[in-house]
Amino acid sequence: MGVWAWLKDIILRATIQPMRLTPDRFEQLAFDIAAEILAELPPDLQAEAETVLLEIADTPTREQAPKDGLMLLGLYEGVPLIARHANTTLLHPDRITLFQNALQAMARTEVELRAHIRKTLIHELGHFFGFDEDELHERGWG
Image (tube, rainbow, N blue to C red; front, side, top):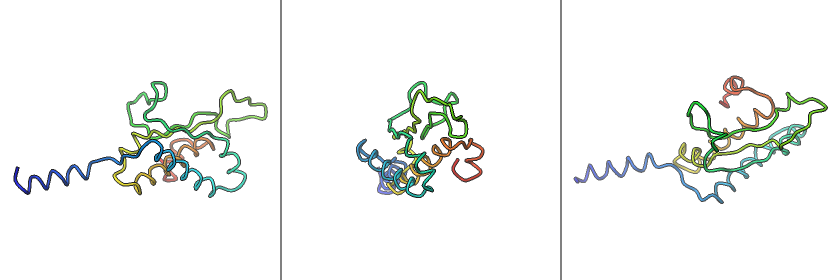
């Protein structure tokens, strides 16, 4: 292999390699970003959002995986605040799951990964507060 071909191969591999963190480091990063987002919310919304569980998984379960085969970065599971009534009984806590493999595949650096985690958390919190996909896209959080 010539020098130029070798250099091109190295550059190509470097530009398409996804970010890889240990599960512990990814979890710490996600929880730090979640704390930053919560701190930016008004107190009443912050109190509501603090009740949502944050979980990290490598990939979606079979039940969580989108039927259209698209890559899923995160998922809100629960009853949105606007859909609740005074007598609503929640059988399961609200939950946001971040999918580490998909989020890492979107980023080459930790800075990019932080941005994707932040956008995904805000998107999923938007579902918790009652925004649908169209409304989230309109606000730039799609």
